[in-house]
Length: 461
Image (cartoon, rainbow, N blue to C red; front, top):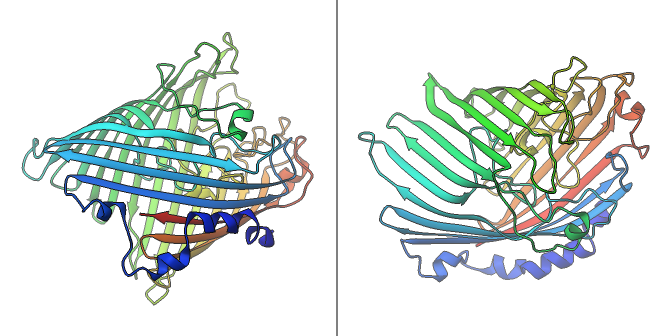
C-alpha cells in the first residue's frame, strides 16, 4: 500500500499542481492578495489540495474489497468591505477520480464548481456598549460553532457543510459571544452514483424541506480558567416531491467546558449533548413516528510537557447512544459535525463516528518545530447498543448475539510545511483491527483488518 501512495497518479498530480523547487526557491511566498497590491478593502485567497487515498479490506457491507481514490479540491474566497458592509463569496470545486461503482465515494468527495458562500454582511460596532460589537450575515455561509462536534466546516473531507440564511453574532466586552442562526442547509448535488463518478456539475439546493436553526453562547474564562459553551440546535426535515426522508425533528441542547492546552499544566474538555424530538420509523410517507431520546459525551484530560518537541499526552473518552429495543429512537444524530478530530480520517475510510459507540483512547501529539507536527492515537471501541449498527460502518446484528466489542483503531498523522504558510505536505493512516462484533455480525465483510493510508499536499496563496 505504501508503494501505491508514492507512485502513479499521486506523484503526477503533485507535479502538475505545483513545482516544489520553484516555490521553495522563492524569497517570499507569493499571494493573490499581494498580486493585487494588497488593497485594504478587498481580501482574496485561494488553495488547491491534491490527495491520494488507499483502502485495503473494506469494512462497509457490499462494497469492493479494496479502493483507491485521487481527489482534488480547489477553492477561492474573496471579501470586499466598504464601511460597515461586507460582500463575500467562496467557490469550491471538489472532484474525485479512480473510483468504481463498488466504492463508497459520494457527496463527501464530489461537489463540483459550487458557490458554498455568497453573502452580504454588516458590522454594527459597539451597539451594546463600550467594547461590544455585532454583525449580521445574510446569504450562503459556513458555520464553525463551539467545539465543532455538531456544527463545523469540514477540513479533512473533500467537500464541506454550508448553509443559506441569517447569522447574527453579538460580542460583549468580557469575552462573551452569542451567535444565532436560521438556515437552510445546502444539500449537496449530484447525489446519483453515476453523476458522482463523472464529477457532474450540478449546483446544491436548499429549501423548506430541511431547516436548521439555533444558537450558542460562549464565554472565555467563565469559571476561573474554564471556558464555557452553551448551545441549542434544532433540525426540521420533511419530505419533498421525489424524495422521502425520515422526517427528523430533533432538538439538541448541550454544554461544553474546557481549558486550553498550555505547557506545564493540565488541560481538559467536557462536552455533553442531549437529543430529543421525533423521527419516522422509515422513509415511507405513512411510517410510524418514534420519540427520540439520545445523547453524546466527550471527555478529555491532557498534559503538555515543556521541551523542544512540545509533547502532549491526552486520555479521551467518547460515547454516543444507539437505537435500542425499547420503542424510542436512541441513535444520536451528529447533525453537521466533522468527525476527523475525534474519530480519525474520513474520506473512503471513516468507520467511527458519533453514533452507537463507547470508546476510550489515548493520544500523543508532538510539534518539534513550527514546520513539523504529528500524533499517534489509539482507541478501543464498543457498541453502546448491541442491536443497532456500529458507528458509521453499517454493520449490524439485530439479535445482539455478536456482542458489543467492535475492535481497535490505531491512527497516525504527520504534517510538514515545505514553505511556511503556503505549501504543506501531510501523510497519515489508520488500521481497524476487528473485535468479536466485526468478525461475527451477519452482514460483515470477510476481508480481514482494514488498512488505510493517504498523502496530500496543499498549496495556499
